Length: 194
Image 1: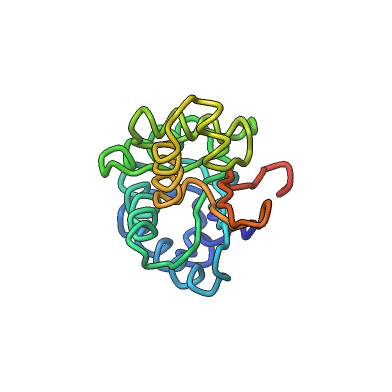
Image 2: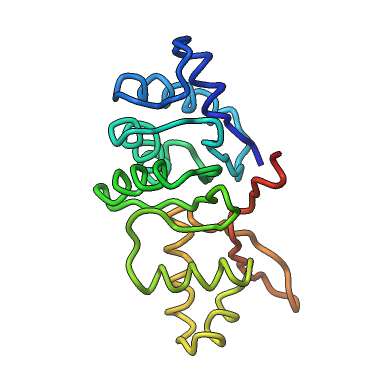
């Protein structure tokens, strides 16, 4: 796990003494810094954007930083990497959620009380599948098929779609002489970070 402390990045890039992420130009400066750094991360890295020391984030900044990063992540610009949001308060959560929903994007977040949630837009069957993964931590297509009484191809497609949206990590394991895809929750905790 790699953590990007947004407060620190804000101080380094804008040097204005504020702890608030406001205005589209400010968001663009911070996002460009994140983009330079994210490309240096190893393949498969989970990058946590840490909002713990940030005051407010307005809609334009949420759109410029979070929605654009997620959109570019999904288009493949950052390779096989993942982004999660941590340390969110209620106000930050609301503005980021609106920015993601307007672009029909989704992200995994951990709010300040440690609860893992989904922000943004995701259809009901993928949301249900993601909630099951959040509960279990990791599973295979067969596990999902059996637990939710789904056809094998349906469970495989759901898991693959969650992986393509970068909401779960996919790794390969050898089991019973064959290769199996394991889908797991993007792991990070504020408790690990503090």
